[in-house]
Image 1 (cartoon, rainbow, N blue to C red):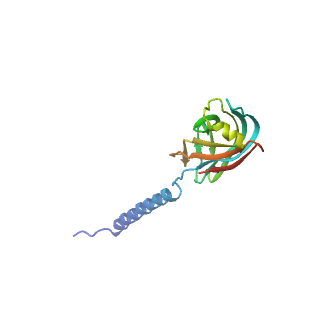
Image 2 (image 1 turned 90 degrees about the vertical axis):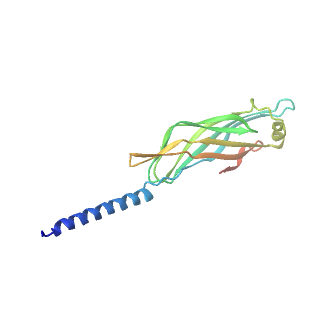
Image 3 (image 1 turned 120 degrees about the horizontal axis):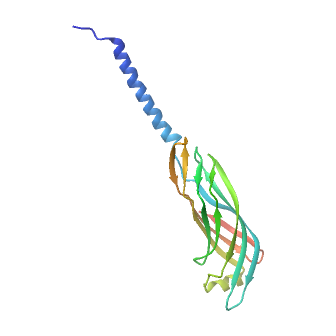
Length: 184
């Protein structure tokens, strides 16, 4: 009978242990570092730049110029890249203005804030409540958008993420300020 070589047995055991350690490291890397969360996309501030209101009983209307800032908060260990998109402003279910979001990226574990201008106009609005809201001095608006992008990990793995913005605010027509800006 031939004797078995103990070095060969130790080499096989070493290779099996090395494979197990590599598999465990890969799983840990995937669970901790490569795990991606959906970034948050919100309006962080809105100020009234210009305001014009017509309160006639037959055709009430408004024109509002806003300076706004949106924020993309990235909780990931990798940057979040996003293409051009739009932020839509609504009154009474009708679109009254659109702001542009330019292609950019939010760095890892940071918040990217970008200012933009938008003009709101009620010419497409045919709601009967507009005159009442203008007389009350408070104009409720909703804001929405979708930011389709991807988290790029280790410059190889790209995981698609789509944060959504849903905000509401009230424009005080008397004081010409934005009040009660709330985002979900």
